[in-house]
Image 1 (cartoon, helix red, strand yellow):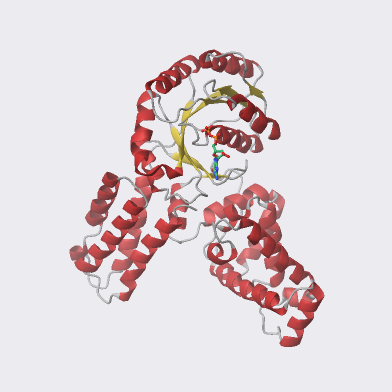
Image 2 (cartoon, rainbow, N blue to C red; image 1 turned 60 degrees about the vertical axis):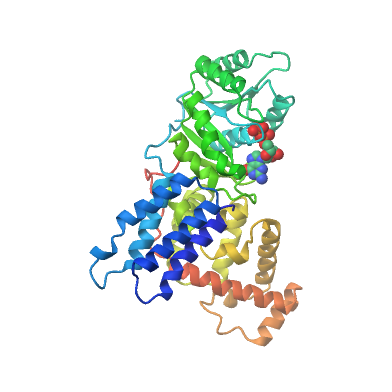
Amino acid sequence: MVLAQLGGSITRALAKMSNDTVIDEKVFGDCLNDITRALLQADVQFKMVCDLQSNIKRVVNLEALAAGTNKRGIIKQAVFSELCNMLDPGKPSFSPKKGNPCVVMFVGLQGSGKTTTCTKYAYYHQRKGFKPALVCADTFRAGAFDQLKQNATKAKIPFYGSYLESDPVKIAVEGVERFEKENYDLIILDTSGRHKQEAALFEEMRQISEATQPDLVIFVMDSSIGQAAFDQAQAFKQSVSVGAVIVTKMDGHAKGGGALSSVAATKSPVIFTGTGEHIDEFEVFDVKPFVSRLLGMGDWSGFMNKIHEVVPADQQPEFLQKLNQKIFTLRLMYEQFQNIRNMGPISQVLSMLRGFRAELMPQGHEQESQAKIKRYMTIMDSMTDAELDSPNLKFMNESRIIRIARGSGRPVRDVLDMLEEYKRLAKICISMSNIKPHKKGDKRPV
Ligand code: GDP
């Protein structure tokens, strides 16, 4: 993901302190400077970076800390909290409720990914049991209605629009009225964008908003926008009451930090991120798991949410119990791979786990990762039950490896690769514990 580099730089800045025997003002100052530089290089707005730096300085008062205190831990915690604060506007956005009709209006510049994101948002909620419908109020861009129609048809979501009507306000009102009458509970309005901010765009948005009274206005922002992000987000906020942000193209090569500035500019939370062109390359954005992931601390809650989404409820306790047994067999790895392959875009799932990302799933190589997992599973298909169920690899001698390679039609090197992967995943899984099955009524993101 685009922010991986930023995460890497911050993590390195924090790790550098481990080499110092004494944590004094100089070491702390150097660490803060490295973090500041990393944030600025990632295009986070200058003022936000300065605020973050002074907040960390205020929280970490080295002189006041007693000898023997874990200063590194306190600094790391302060960095974590301040990054969370930077991304958390302190108030949740409106979230649709099943059966309660609501209108959600999407705004953003042309090319930001607005139309694609409207369908992703509709599809996401449809899978959660909502009855979404899409209205194309973009009469500015030729082909906008066709695009929405095509996306909506693929996702089997009803849509409304017109080739003839040129007044976007009229289309928006008609579409909302029609779907309200038909008892749709999530009516999504796609509005037009422009290549750059201009008065006509803002006036049109304002009129549509006034005529349809949306319950939520979502600002869609391309993650590659850079330092211009803050001003752009603020300009939209000043014209319509933006209540949430979706940052798109997080799978690209942009630095991404600029988009994070949109939180401060709109005082609204990022609720989802777009991680690809495909309809389900769309992730719920939660601040703490995001920052954990950014700092290479893993994101169990995100992983567990994915599991709750795809593993049938009656199989969850057994699945989690296995994970908690602290015995990681090759069979369990095989089952994890099966689950992972069912969980949709593999990168989304694996990137949530510390350690999986770098080797098993290098960015932009999802297809290769899929192929690799398939290869490993083919190799494991040639193993005996005893081999699959053994809690370790002590039995795995040369003749067995050659037999497995022959049986699976793969070179010995591939078998060794798979076993190395197993050792690495076993280490990660065994280090995890206390994962509880999801209980009815537990809070989960919408
Ligand atoms: P709009 O003009 O704002 O409605 O933008 P579109 O929805 O037409 O998207 C512009 C381009 O960005 C299209 O080619 C989309 O497929 C692409 N796009 C949208 N979201 C994402 C994303 O999250 N990742 C990637 N890689 N491409 C995206």
